[in-house]
Image 1 (cartoon, rainbow, N blue to C red):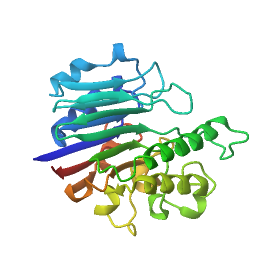
Image 2: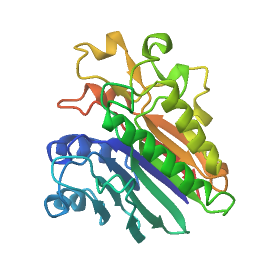
Image 3: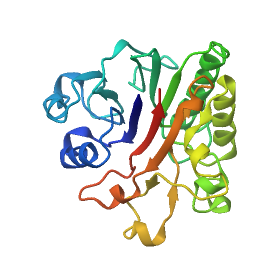
Image 4: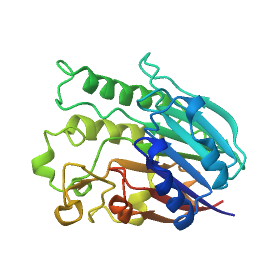
Length: 265
């Protein structure tokens, strides 16, 4: 069976209805993982997703900030959420798809503007969450689970994941302490970077372009903040990957674009 999964930082789900319709029509995913939904569960626009064929859902949100959601055309089992660093900010949802495939939908803190945990509590929270996640997945290393980890991890780890490695070394999302932390997290379980399994690490690859750039396409000052990782047990099933770059130019866009993988499961 072919499984198509899309991850997207929607940046407020209630104002992206037309974009979600385009994603459903043009990408047609079986599973859609959203981050930064910015709405409490009771106000989540489920009617729209039912209209689009996503009849199964696990919503984990809060008012105005953060929030993650998994929408699916396939049945979902064992829905659950994790809280990190004793902060209940709706950043990690887990579901199981048919065949026992775990989907982990993550939204790592952006981290504010100052890359110093001593003076910036948001940056400290980001680093603390990375460390906690590393311990969590490291404790599961070798369990043989079929697992997909997706989401806005808010870190661009490779030099080719940013428009200028040198200019962004001291900018939150590409500082060495963040990129090293993300690489430790990936290695803790042995996750395979599905995006870079398709697009070689030598090639530039972005999923986010700032709203501050009036002509984002011409300047192309992007970063790869959104990621798809596969467990070693599932990595051989990878058949394709697409970054929907043109979505950044749609009307009333998110600053992130959808990333889609296809698996043969």
